[in-house]
Image (tube, rainbow over all chains, first blue to last red; front, top):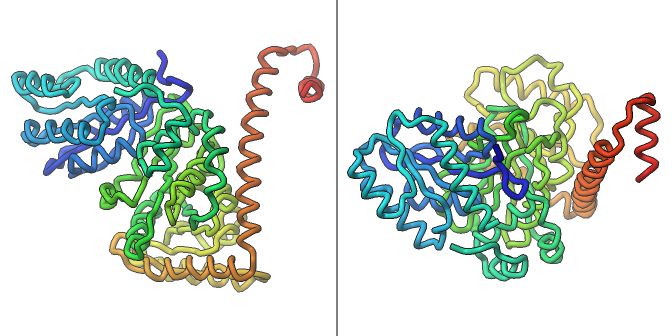
Length: 142
Length: 304
């Protein structure tokens, strides 16, 4: 399957936000996307929403994947959505994952998070989602 | 959502100081479509101080880079960082992790950090690194730091691109013969012995000193600085050494020679890239195997 649009691999920022030191999931996703042929920028732990969005802008990322396992998802996801709007960067595909109850995930989708993956989600589904959605963004923005 | 901006639109935003436009411009260079942009921006280049930072994986290049960014910001200079990590030769994907050490600077609007995947490029840099440096220079960033992939012994392209090359070395990684070998040991304007708290740090310093005493240095004599980048120790000394080198380049006029080398480096990269594409095309078109390899190579080259 195609991982490049305009001869350039898709670029995705994988981020951890707030007081949440559990990064194994984020690393697994980063590695899976790398092996699927994408360029993955990993931010490291304890980032603020501003830092995450600034990183995505400077890296010209097609997408941001945010992992939250601390329970603060209803605070942090909306703050990233807000930052993306404030920075006029709504074209960047924002998705996430973590221990997030179904009703919260639904609410986050309504707020503008493109997709939420919960424990047990097959890696292939995540890769397919990123490829499809980030590919669309790339085709549009170039 | 915005659709694909034209080069002219991108340049307009670029001139207004939009980081987004700079980011897009670098992407365009990475996909081999940066020619018009570089052409337009080239007259604005030549102002930035360019510092290359190389050394083996894990020596602390990103941590040193972070220290240098902090120092430059304390001096009120704006900074660009281009940080190269390797691409997979198998999947072509990459995990770019250098930003982790630089995260204290993420929201400083006068610091612009860009990670680059090497995309099969040898020599420790990526194909578009030169373009990214020119673009950051034209953007008005005062200092541009270029961090190579973690290198082995022979990745020396950085010395052609940067005005000042820092070679960071790791205590405890080999005997005295290692520092005598050819390759990256020959390109340093400043040697940095990082991890000063390591028990072997003094031994490495002695080895570098004695290696330097064996040789004649007609011009600049490389400096040796010891740092413990994680604690921020020695960064002031390192910055002072860089400034002495830049002063030396300016006083002797060698700066022009360095600029010319950087220019030639880039022309060579561009020409090689085009030649490679033409060669690949010719090989696909004319893949005959009824002659010997030398004959086949001669034939293809004569068609160029």
